[in-house]
Amino acid sequence: MIDDVPDRRLPYIRPRDAATLLVIRRDGPRPRVLMGRRVGGHAFMPDKWVFPGGRIHPSDFRVPAASALHVETAAALARTCPPARGRALALTAIRETFEETGLIIGQPGRAASRGEWRDFVATGHLPHIEPLRFVARAITPRARTRRFDARFFTVDAAHLVSLDPGAGSGELDEIAWFDWDAAAALDLPSITRAILAEVAARDTEAGRPIPFHRFDRGQHRLLAV
Image (tube, rainbow, N blue to C red; front, side, top):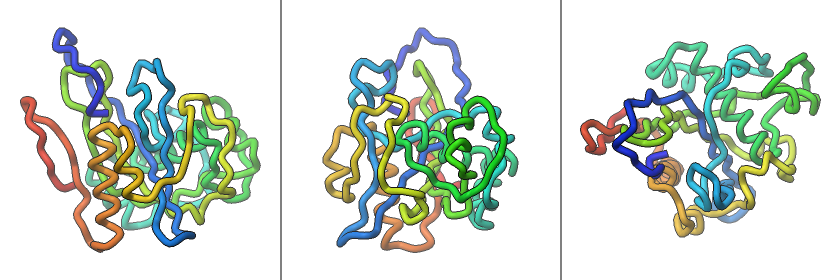
């Protein structure tokens, strides 16, 4: 998000709410995180390795869920937005992960849904948001062609219905699991690299504050949520 090409001729662009999910496997000798490479030629971050994610949609406010947010996650999100929007952002992270990778974070359940959630609920599952943890926030700098106010979540891969990815939307041309060191060696956007390092550190340092990356007058500021 921070690596989009700047264009200072652009008027002020208000950041749009978005959510990103780091799915972490712990079934091997070292933790591994799911990453995907964006299709070359894409207008936004082509060929970069990223975590699944995208902008919020109105349907994310309406879709039924199999669970409520964890109390600590809800409280942390509430420091950044109203509770209904915080819940919707967690659902955005699950929906975008499904759309981009085919992976389902859900529990058996049925609901009628059109639009962005139609294919997810057609699998016979409802989104399961309780295991998500809010770990970072970042706002894209000004003078960018696209701007997002992104919340980053983690979830243990044990909550996936299956570890086998589906076809996805085609936004990512490769999907794979990487340990922290291997992921850091990929071609990453700067914010992705920063969040990767933060989540790796949280593995060994409990109680770390939730970082908030923002830019004021061109200067990077790292605050706490």
